[in-house]
Length: 368
Image (cartoon, rainbow, N blue to C red; front, side, top):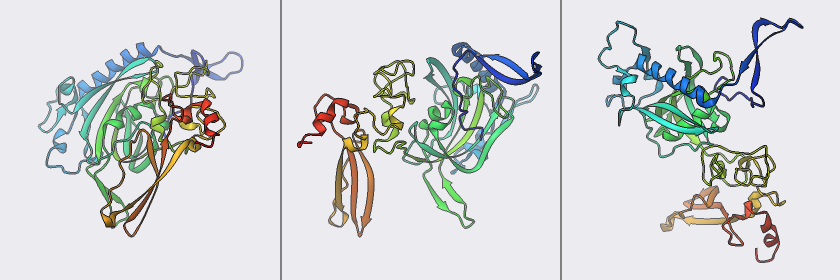
């Protein structure tokens, strides 16, 4: 599907694509596309997006208080042609730009050393308690189209996507929405979701396919996606017991802290300021032995079991969700058994054992 990220990695400053220009040597058809400077392209893309917003309107009245269960199926975005008058119940998107508290939000993010603007039309926050992390799997309905309003991909029934497999904009935007408040199985076998997250993202090419092209999308195309956010599922890609979003350790500039991307310095795998602790070329979220000490990450965590008897009024334990993670749960006649894994720091150097290759000597002692 077009939404899935194209597996390309730019290794030079030139990409070759098919065209109708003949090669003098063998009659093949190729054309050379220069890879643009990301900062310069962002300026061009932002101008195109603002122009689109200033020329298009949406049926804002469909998302008023009378609609208690909005969805992307209720949304129409149309171009206001020269000489046309905006009818009541519609709102020009451009009129919402830079208006505090309006439904159109401007979000600035950094990606590949470039500052990007995404415009987000927030039609419904979503009534569920959870928001996806940038590395989670989401269940969505969606429709993607170009600034020429040409639809290139859609799903009217729910589909699941791992956000790490999609173009960057999706993991930058969906984290700001909540999932549906609930769902019910309909008589026709269709699951009906209530109070879902509903929005539209208007994104520059640098957070889309950039210099790549795919069916219905040319190089350097800003894009628009409508979406319903229905559910989210936390990922642990390497099954080491640590949720994947917590294995984003450094920002792109090498400073500590998550930036919603996994950074690996392939030019210098000894770099200690990226998300590949042991320098093996695999980010920790996909590495079952993060410090390459020969002990699996999962085996360097502490296993705990909690038994909660709700018949006696017992309360479930409160976990520090940055240090201890639930990995299993059973319930029999009101007795809940919860299994967890907890990060430990055996030598007190503020580095978890799973990231500290030197800790293997301590792990092998009888005290561990």
